[in-house]
Amino acid sequence: MSALRGSGIQGLMSSCLAFEPCAEFYGSKGASAFFGESGFSLFGTWKAETTRRQRRAARASSVSGFNAVNMVSGKAMAIAVQPAKEIAEKKRIHMKKRRVVVTGMGVVTPLGDDPDIFYNNLLDGVSGISQIETFDCTNFPTVGEIKSFSTDGLVAPKLSKRMDKFMLYLLIAGKKALANGGVTEEVMSQLDKAKCGVLIGSAMGGMKVFNDAIEALRVSYKKMNPFCVPFATTNMGSAILAMDLGWMGPNYSISTACATSNFCILNAAHHIIRGEADAMLCGGSDATIIPIAESELYKIHDWSPTRSCWCSGSCCFNSGETF
Image 1 (cartoon, rainbow, N blue to C red):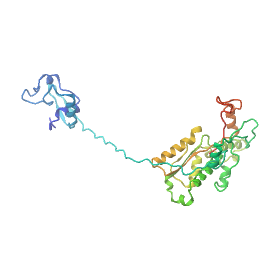
Image 2: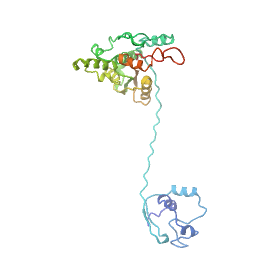
Image 3: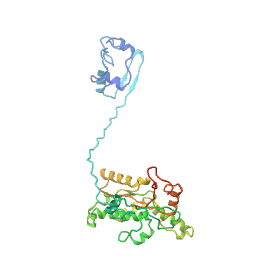
Image 4: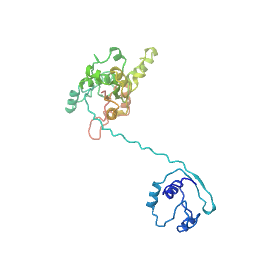
């Protein structure tokens, strides 16, 4: 018999061995079932007035790690108890939330390529819906097509010929946002590029470049754009812009249909709040005005001129290009 030190032996037996004294003990009225009236018991002197609160207090002061033998009723029991493992509580480091501010904006839309012009046109109710000009639209209704935009000085001519439109819109608007926020070459050189990221998503990705590759394949695989597959992925726009700027922070894309831009902006803000980035370029870009996409929408009558919204006589949905 060992480790019979301290006054908390009764609580120690109750908590660590997980058993209660036998009937003889409770019936002894203070006497020891093993050592008699004048002796002692492993469970101590039994008291009827012992409350649950007192037993809990005794258990709290107990120490684990002993061997015990109980000879009550002529039965021997040997129990080995392992030392209780200490649970280390991880202290949560209090970190003040960082504020997130919008320092610059860039847009490429049917309503304008400048944020102020775009916003004023929205307030004035100007419509960006028009007839399709990039291909024969005899069998198609109107869409929100970007009529003209320039990549001069923003995208290398060789790349602009190979890239999908959604990537061109992304690159142009992204660089315009930096200029709008006053991020010059001097400011750029002072930024920690490992803490600057790009999070620009796309619902459909490079549909135009992939569609052109399929058409070229009808003639010969040698006519295909060698970058048709990577340029068709939704994350390639963010990757190209990040490589162009030399930014090495968080870089990926999100694709959640019409809510893509909102999710990208939200996640970019979270990266800054958590201290994972100091600056983020975020938003969304799409260019889906091609025959296959418009035919599919027309097939399900999403923007059919004969289908009206419940609240007005206008069309329910128009596809468009934007960043």
